[in-house]
Image (cartoon, rainbow, N blue to C red):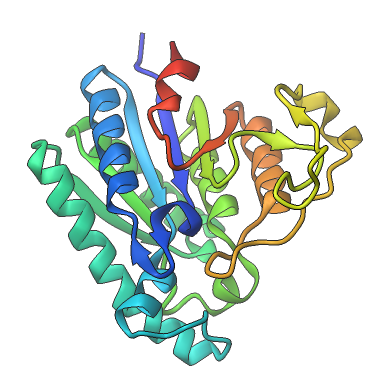
Length: 245
């Protein structure tokens, strides 16, 4: 029996605090993912944060609006992000690999097959791929896309069993609990009931691109491909262990 495959996506709001790296959260994430891989799971991490971290590195007070500036800032942040991941994973003797994708890579048949084969080879070698949008060249993705959708497409590509969306709320709610005090928690949604789901999705954070609506879209994509999808608190990545046990 093959080991379950997990795709774990963490958002900018969980990775950063006011433009600075949230090292305690990243450390807990690295420990959790390394433990899962050592327990036999095949693990892929989809990480946001390049633009947010680039803004912090360049002392920018808000996310840039001009496309060229956004792409430049992403290039600055991506290197810093991978350096931190590599240092922390290496301290636990866990090899990682950077994989940068565009939506086009998952649309063209030859690229799709190559991506699938590369992911499988990396996981066979015991490597945790760290995936991000190739922000520097993917104009249409930076403009319209988000890593929630990317993570769902990756989960579909590699035939994952689970997709974990780590964010700044602990589960799905009927509305944004930070804005609506009586928002109702939603613990389980069968895939057949997605279309009847009534959600007021709210807005995304200052540094991030997504929001609850993009997570629902990602959940639809992933569940239709056979992956169970979990929305949980990014500051406590160890919560994933309870879901998998």
